[in-house]
Image (cartoon, rainbow, N blue to C red):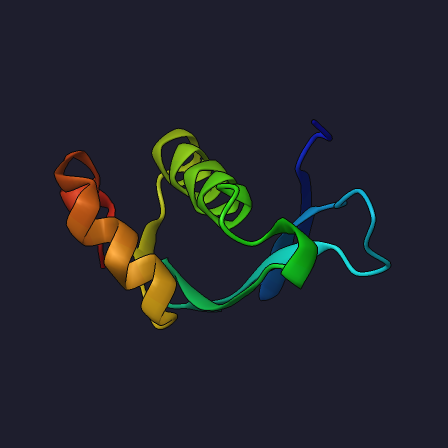
Length: 94
């Protein structure tokens, strides 16, 4: 499977994953609020839904949060659900 691209424009960015058979990538968008990143939206092309693609994007964000020392505001409902499924991320929630 393709590697996740991390786009950081300073005050906003996204995690992007190209999806086979789709002209649109899967994305998780974020923007900065204080010392946190607000996970604002996830999108997965229909052909890739239900295959764990969005979860991979969120997991990449959590890895970066641990490594880079920021917290995450789960504005996106999907990210909020994953926080409930992963209690080990509790310290990363803003």
